[in-house]
Image (cartoon, rainbow, N blue to C red; front, side, top):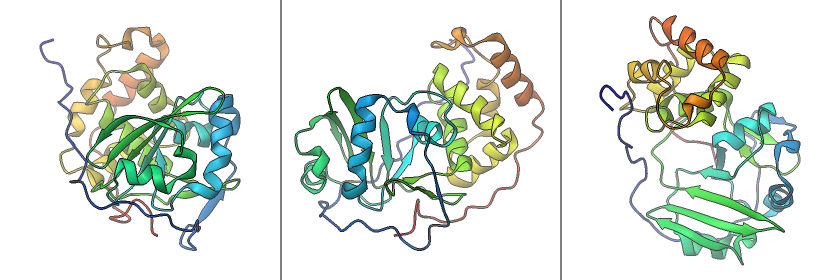
Length: 251
């Protein structure tokens, strides 16, 4: 459609690199906080797999996406697990390194990207994105029950205001509403995205948050559309947000 504010997807993945090796599970002392994840948002199959992450997930991986937000806020039921890392990965070596992937089906493999379908009396989609040239603006937290690292609300907000430039999905707009409700302002989210993504254009996001004719956005509640449009209209300039680190997490 003419005037569509969304740009094409910009690849974030680095070139493929060497295989993963099994490493002992450690929780580095540089992590500043732990939190009690809201595990009731996990469907039964995901909840069963969640417990296995305690002993099997290498420390470079950080949980991002809607599940990370839901575990922090309890905002919606989880759909999958998306783990990000700065370190390159190989799909087949990763399967050898992670015991919970032993019988999983590899449903997508690309350079430094792998998505598996894990059966735990129900299917669970687990994706790994490696070699990412991505830093962070907030501190990673550790889930108290199993040590999984979860991105900060500000980093999740930066991801969300960028992703609405790429796709038109209802869940992303609802996630932005949750982030606003939890105290991350739209100027802060835009400033965080600008600090993390060299190609980020705040105006494109502001336009996207005022246009609801694409995808399944028409099904958004009217009050959500109004709240996002008003929040976008009030933004004069993104907040100044400093990049805390060039790494997703310290190892």
